[in-house]
Length: 477
Ligand code: TRP
Image (cartoon, rainbow, N blue to C red; front, side):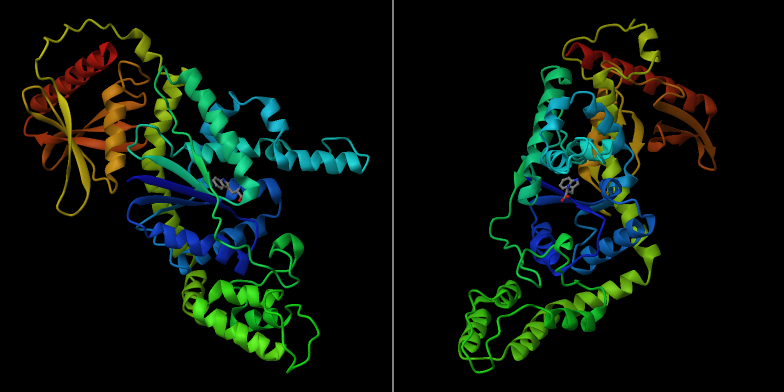
């Protein structure tokens, strides 16, 4: 995939029309492009920074997930997950925290605004400021960089955000560059993310004409409350006091601005002519309601069906977390090793391997695609014997990342045979005597059953020898 696109949605509120027009609709459209791999997640750890009401967090996660799915986000095409289901993210946050300058965080707009407000009120500069708020940009950097592994075969990591978030993306770049410099060993760990500001996506005015925003209490809910609530809200849009029959100025009317966000160019032009021809505001509101409802009604039906079955949403998010972790787990393993969090066992490794003859064909990984669409890899000994067959992966990148982890494990590395991160478990089943390769809690691959335990044990010994030889080569190369 040429492009990765990633964005987070803080789960503190109920989605409104402004979120739909400004974020949900363009994101769903972008996620359908074939050359883009999209990552969308519920930023629920970020929500905890702003909100200490557990019920509101719970409700908002459900409503936001249901809204995005109802609006057409296809969880089979994109990676849709909850931040709090990816334990690698807070772990990466700490690694990044340790290389982030405090001075950089002092300059974050959100923190500075809080300090300015405190000083203006004659309070202590940091009154009411939590470490969560202060470190907010580091968690956000981890969200992004977790999926920005440089060697993953994408050209750019794009982060669509509002203007208020651009500084955070710049901070993520700074932190990534610092980490690369310290720990990349001449080779970048992270690709640097880029902010993508959607210029053509208008911000939607709210009921009072200011930007539609929860903080101005001027929103029109997207699905909550059904068509009835939508109509009621639209009736509350502020207009001028021109009487029916009097010409209206469409350009200065936010009712018209909202209409335009939902209508095609011809439709909008026709509506403008009617307003200029004296259409009554009451009638104009009815037209606006009908236009918006025509787009939203089918989605609302899906939304209501989803909300009624929260367990299904949970399943979708769990499946998304699995996809996300297939990338995050091996990458975090590399990053831990990069900073020096490595297994002790590696220090005892005797490195008494005979050097490989130049040109000799060594053991190797090969990946392939199964007819059912899943991806696998095999590990073949130098003589071609199959020593491992991986579990199925939905994503070819996940298979590739695990191969890279396994190739490098020993040399540079944090791995150990036995109950360390990387482990071979012998298994017995009806097919015979087999073995499995585990990384932490992930079962990665298995070795085909042998009729005799001795044959299985020999295969395990061969696997260990071949992989250690491979690591030695990787260490030299
Ligand atoms: N801070 C973002 C906002 O308030 C939400 C967010 C969290 C995010 N993590 C992110 C956006 C990572 C983009 C990338 O809008």
